[in-house]
Length: 296
Picture 1 (cartoon, rainbow, N blue to C red):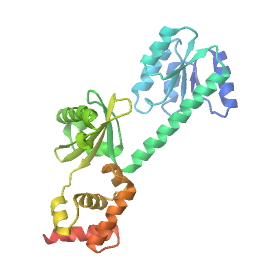
Picture 2: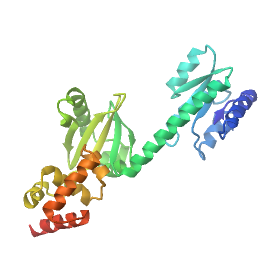
Picture 3: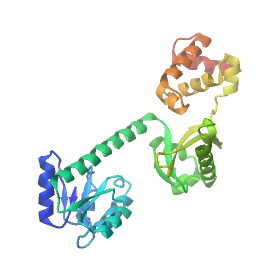
């Protein structure tokens, strides 16, 4: 999408992008851009800062405030040497810029890079959404910046989240304290970022830029008594954990992510479980464990 009140700029950019195979949407002001974004999600937005009515800065601010559009990359279009407007654009959420007068090669290079990056991010988000994992990210104040649908469903058990879409203060305090400790001791103690909160186990680790933290939430054993399972069936602690996650429909890959292991290692543990229980399938192993629990 190109947002600019100057017809000549729209024509130059549209021609260059369409010749390279892009489908181009145009808007001549911020209001029409926001209206179009109600119905379609472009890969990239090229946005002029100086426009009559709603200028590009206010348009950018409103795009970033909307949940359905906040992650669309915005490239500000600015005049050569207009550093103040360029910095203002970044402060409103833009991630790149294009200098006027336009050079087609530069426009195509910058747009292409952000389209490719955006598609990689989209594939990653889709994979996480389908993984069944309850993952969320928080900033240094404990505010939620991103989460999977499974995490939202799990957090629905907390009144604070249901009312304000926020984590309970006690959980925030624990998470940030363990995050700080994990950053200091992760090389010596990989479990430093793990803790329990009510009937949840939580693993926290810093994201790449260290301004956010990633949390993996898991319901605790619940009706699965892992100690009894281990003792009655002769399983190791890790084998009992794996069998519990198998009963919840998790794949080897899911279990590996949850337990910080590889799918191959999880499969090896499953082979040992099958041998100890005298079964050959995952469902038979779960069935035998549940039967033993009923007998006790």
